[in-house]
Length: 115
Image (cartoon, rainbow, N blue to C red):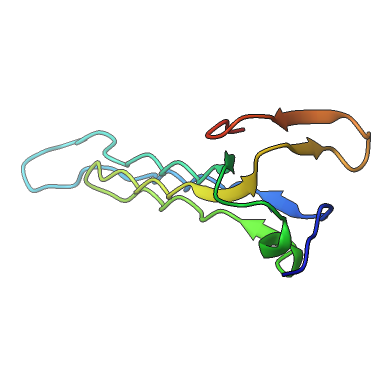
């Protein structure tokens, strides 16, 4: 088994869905008013330490992690569906840094700790 202790990945959370501009239109209801729904929440990126892993080999070949987008709102006050969060498991002891500044964003020093 190969041991990998350094990987560089790019993560992006999902965009929220757009809201809908819609107005109620019914017979015998003058100036029905707005009835557009809000857009759904975009998915978040969650990095969680787990005791079942001991190497970053799983992350070595996939360099981009993109969460899904939220669904757009629709007429008749229908709100968009929220997107699911994207979970990235890493071994305990993983240090997460910002590549451009070198700043340490998180130190996952115990199991089930997440960012």
